[in-house]
Image (cartoon, rainbow, N blue to C red; front, side, top):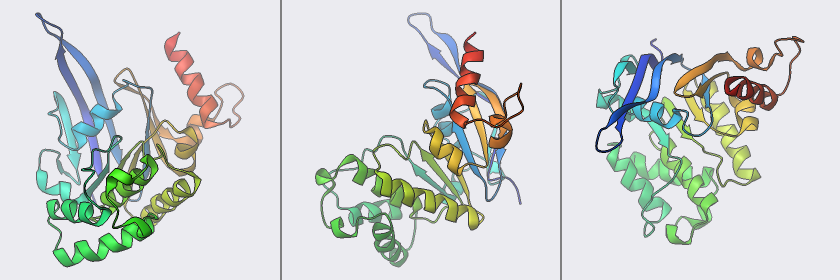
Amino acid sequence: MPPMVEFAQAGKDYLVGFPFPRPFVAVAQVSFQIEPGEVFGLVGPNRAGKTTLIKMLLNLCRITRGEVRRFGEPARVRRTLSRVGYMHENQAFPKYLTPLSLLEYYGTLTRLPAAAIQERSYKLVEQVGLADRRQDILARFSKGMVQRLALAQALLNDPDLLVLDEPMEGLDLSARKMLHGIVKERRRQGKSVLLVSHSTHDVDQLCDRIGIMLGGQLAYLGSLAAFKQDPQTKQPRSFEAALHDLYDRSAS
């Protein structure tokens, strides 16, 4: 079985500046894979290139060099997008819709049969804790409730690859516990999750491997256990402490 995701020396440049634009390297030459049944964490400060990597994976921008593949096919092959679920960092759902009508809309976009949309929508709305609000319009929803609905939308097509971009933003403790359970269940099913997060606790609890982006490059790629080992004492330390150490070393 091919990797769910494969970046091979992939990079993206943008032209910036006026009136004499010059190339800006958003992502240099990045290479990594995400295997079936793996929860992969993508970590890094703002403007490190994480969002650009997601856009490259979802074919929302054209790569400048290298190759990006989904399920063994080039990312530009759109048919494989039906196997991906994506939870965006900032939701822009129409506020006049209800949870069920929103899921019906997105289910139609992914070409799910009408019966499957209806069945899965009711189950997912209940799973994310919105069953009692399924007839309310989104204008009445808090940020946390919209995040719950965004998770349901990302799960609607039962994706083989679930991409979560800052999914914990605005969630209370019960919702975070629910999301942890969903991620772990998908791992047990042999499905993959790409988790992009600033939450060191959630990455530490959920991820099998991590990639740490700094300045458009991968500063680390490997297991969490190896990253947390202190290079001098050879003793384990917290993920947050190890991350701060890497940031300090890169800044010096």
